[in-house]
Length: 378
Image (cartoon, rainbow, N blue to C red; front, top):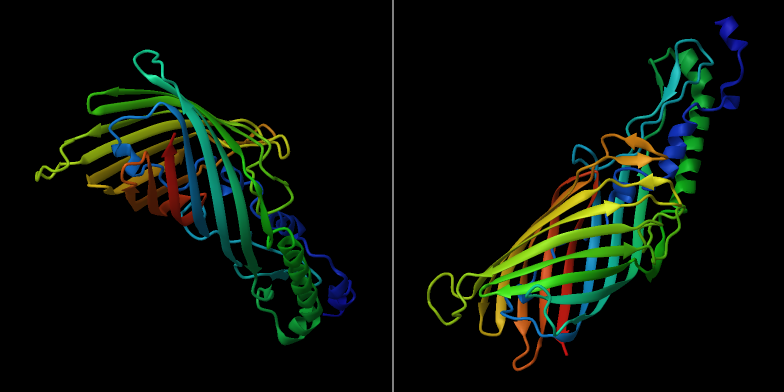
């Protein structure tokens, strides 16, 4: 025991868990489809307008107001994400170290988003279909709560009373350093932000064949949004582009809405798209490519329509950081929710109210949302 007492004072020793603390301070900045999200909205896109029997050529507009709550971040197993394990190799006495129990993360982000869409559907046809050009500009307000907690440190293995007393200053130092790191990380996470989001530019070929409608096109997302790699919440996704080609198909089972048969006024719809991400020039992180699939069902009754949609977003290639593969980080989420629509009598306009909730998430944010959408043709 005398030889041990001649070692350095535990209060002057430095923890060996600094790399873990640095990782924790990074928050959500580079893991699992960068920031645990992809440039694909975590809510369905189909609404009552899929039952429209024809599209009006000329200019059109779409405005949607979405209230979204991100209430969880799912890890690779689908459980609540936890901060990294902390471990100190303090050895003022051979065979002992300071360790921490598993920490916890309380995460919540409330987001209000206004999307303004403007476009034009050509009067002329190309391959028996019209071509639509559209621009989607989002305005986003975010408020994030990010609370990391670690229980107090302890000595392992359990020491005798004299050794525990001698190591008590080391435990105090360890707890203080962890709390200081948590406070520093919180400064970039617990923030309110607002600003322009990333702009979506789309070109879509649309063709009607009797009860069938086909829409095939491509969208390009440009990094126009407010973004700071050192900040937790950001209206923009980052300094990179996303190209997303896709196709959607709708089919009207029975256009006779007044018919008493079960399929009267019923339309089914399906969509699939493929997202391709470029490298974020600010972080050198490249999220993997992904597939988005969605199905919808709607029944029209007079000026009202009722429906439901379900969707899945699945990352199919690994992320890379500085050109190196990041294994076990593929994003996945699903969602389902009902919607109700109302067409303004005698007007080429209508409203759509939709609720959506995520489930089965892996390496992904988990959100629930309520969206009100207004569609108008001129």
